[in-house]
Image (cartoon, rainbow, N blue to C red; front, side, top):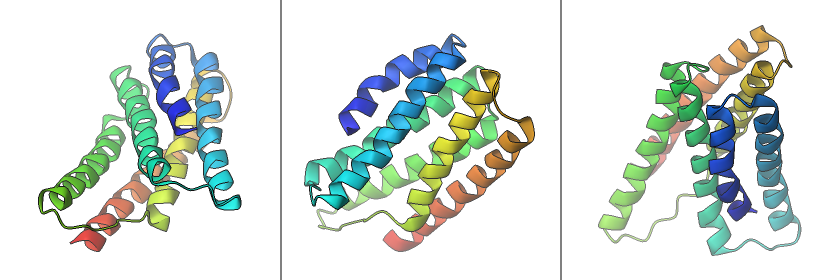
Amino acid sequence: MSALRIALAPYIFYLLWTHQFRSALVWFAVAGLSDGVDGWLARRYGAASRLGALLDPVADKVLLSGSFLVLALRFVVPFSLTFMVLGRDVLILVFALRALATKTRREFPPSIWGKLSTAVQIAYVLAVVGFQAGYGYGPVVVLLGWVTFGLTAYSGIDYARRVS
């Protein structure tokens, strides 16, 4: 299902860019739910694979980072929050590349903070897009934005601490 999220991403970005928020909401929800179902199925049936473990975070990063970027460029979400989300992802990428460059075989299993941060980022994008589509409540979007900022920052700090 990671491949599904990666395949859906450009279409979702197009919908966001053209302010087709109702359609974007549906497709982003499908992509977000597929992330949860994918993880549940892998754990439930012991179907986890090395490829899946690699593709899942890539799919999350593509979908979330791209959505934040498009929404920021269209002035729908704050650039500061987008910078935090993208900055954390770049930080993780730098640490991963550093580990590859040293040829040291290290595993970096996802932390609870990283998983929680991803879940809140998905919820925030859903709330923003839903609000733009005429659903939802503005103060909830603002609150979720602050929670997203804080958890994203903390998960980045936690990741840096764990790999250093």
